Length: 385
Image (cartoon, rainbow, N blue to C red; front, side, top):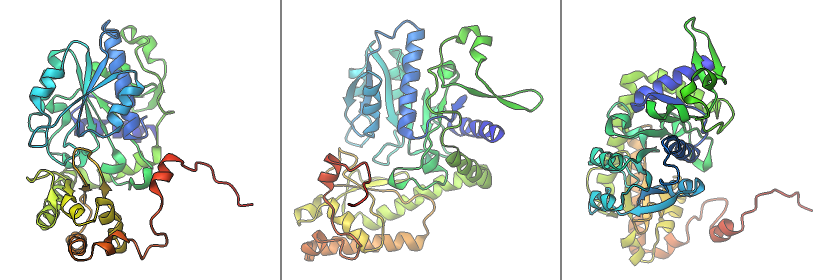
């Protein structure tokens, strides 16, 4: 187990362009929290813990980004996207200052677009002494094509469940290893896996005692030992099975599939930012909304068509958003069938909106009270009396 975990760390470091990896975080959001705790420890080591009070996030960021920052005690500053759907560099520079601890950036971003000025963004943050965190939720678009470490990021998490084979719907299971540059290594969660010269492996819980410069710097344990190990095993197996060329092909296939679907659907739906995308794209049901059909209605109608609906109403900067991410695994036949279903729903929204609003009609359950479910969740099962 230790040998597999150690080799997985080496693979993830190479893929991400980083130097060291912690496998402990069991989700991307937990890895965000881990990274920001590492940032805090880094600034404390430099005597700037009290000064570095702010984390900056783009307006297109995953909601967990500002939530993780707030949980670490940081103030959150939001910067807007520009007309092309990427970070407004001028707005970012205006928000920067000596009180900034870091910037959290998803690349490709949640719109499905590559942040073309990423090196300038990272340089601007570094110029004021801040660190740059990469939200690697969309890493499946970059495999073998670009490495966050080469782009200027100080760390990045990788959703190995999403990028390397474990289905990630319904909230789990997940794993979110954190990959960091050497300057952040002393602050990673303990214990670390060590490979000795004789090829043996062990946990080194006393490593800090043998490295005086690192005494007391680790943020401690985030998740016991090897995190969500089953997901890590599947990720390792997927990576070793495909090899370097296969991983590059997965990224290219994911990008091709997304652009193919975008080409099929752009005439029937509004496109948030209508240009070539990476592995995902965001449609808007604004046109359908004017006809009485919301993005949620479109999603429910897809259930009747035999498809699990995509994410809706995110990113928040796109009204009536439909985020579509086909990944590398879907065949052309499946993509064509999905596009045909979306086109049928768009036509029904135009000619018979009531039928879309009533969907789903073929599922075991119809529409649930989602507002009540969110505000008054039932978290414990009770035996019926």
